Length: 118
Image (cartoon, rainbow, N blue to C red; front, side, top):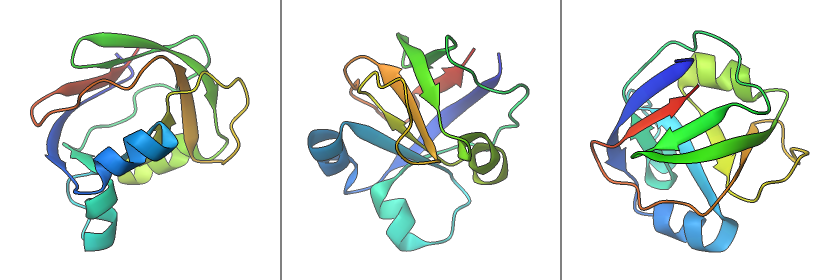
């Protein structure tokens, strides 16, 4: 397991991000900025044990998604802040440096769900 964490809160704007942008924004639960908490799925703090690469698998609540691209800053922000933007569009090129793209339809995320990369 490269990274594994548990959802602890879901911001009020997360559903809008899903509907409009096909994305989930993740942050560690210790993020203090209330505006960021409003747009994010917050989760327990974990250590990124190994770089996430194309071909890895993201699992959310038991549903699996193939990683298709990783932005050049996504791993640093995931390590430092538990932050990345997961786009569910299957793109093979990240448009923004903090994005991780996966193939599939965004699952219904709930508090207590496990999010992992392997």
